[in-house]
Length: 117
Image (cartoon, rainbow, N blue to C red):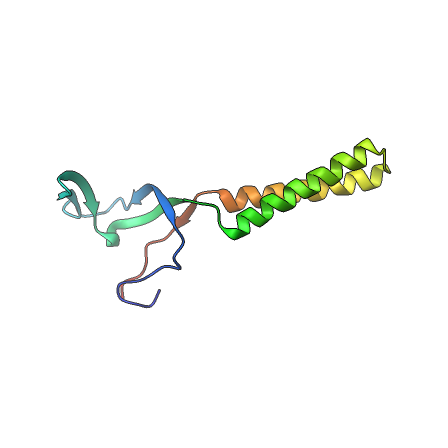
């Protein structure tokens, strides 16, 4: 993020919300016309943080989903085959950890505004 203007890593995301600093100048946010539509704009210097959501699944999320499905199948098979309780417990704990990791990866992220140096 040292370029001017700063560039990200190419991750496609959907804008959710913005938090503007309380002491933001009243002139920093105003209405402008883009493509014949009124759009609220704000100076990046007055942004505290933004919330975005991944627009599509990354390869990492797809891989985690596949791991969750595979482990879910192994767990179901262990229960059906009446495997030892410790094996079933371990599989369920691992499945819970994977599901939590997947949930975290899919959550909207807050990013601080880039520093303009």
